[in-house]
Image (cartoon, rainbow, N blue to C red; front, side, top):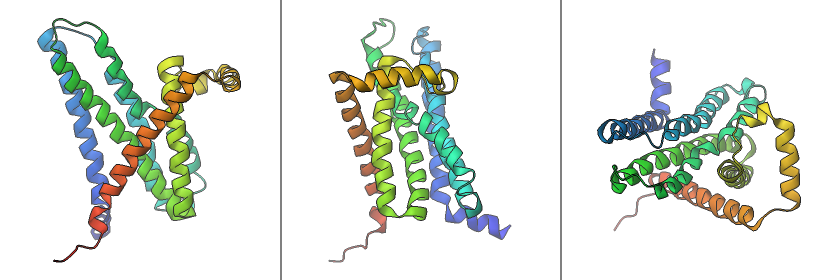
Length: 231
């Protein structure tokens, strides 16, 4: 019993963040359901599904982190979990692009309500991605060192930007990698040989935004670790 209590105490902030994100997700869904009930409007049905997909990478990351506590699983189970994580990670920040649907006219629903609802969904999705990346970076940091972990962060941010572009403009989904892998490879090779300016610009800008949010929250989380200054 004491061992379990000490374990919970040692990782209380990581556990608390999980439940905070769960609460934010519940509130986001509640806003969407209230919107449908109060205004009798069923738009934005995709938000709940997108939020569900955004939870897959963080569940994978928490699972990998738990397995990493026992080092015997480090090179056996975690690589498979990491593969699932990287495939579904773009779904987390992807929700931000759902703001494009604000251009659709919905006369019965105040625009401010839709903006606030989308803010809850998109920010929750972004945090799900950021926290999952932090957990995976922590695993890499402990095993391979700081520099390797930050190189991983840069690569993952770039892949996330590319993944969001693929999902928003080419309309591929994460599960297409399992159901239509050959088609994806063929189309990716063709696109890589002659990339459009839009694909390059969107990937770089979105990857930079995701990286900026991650580094900002990473630095903020380490503020308390700095020694306090005395006057």
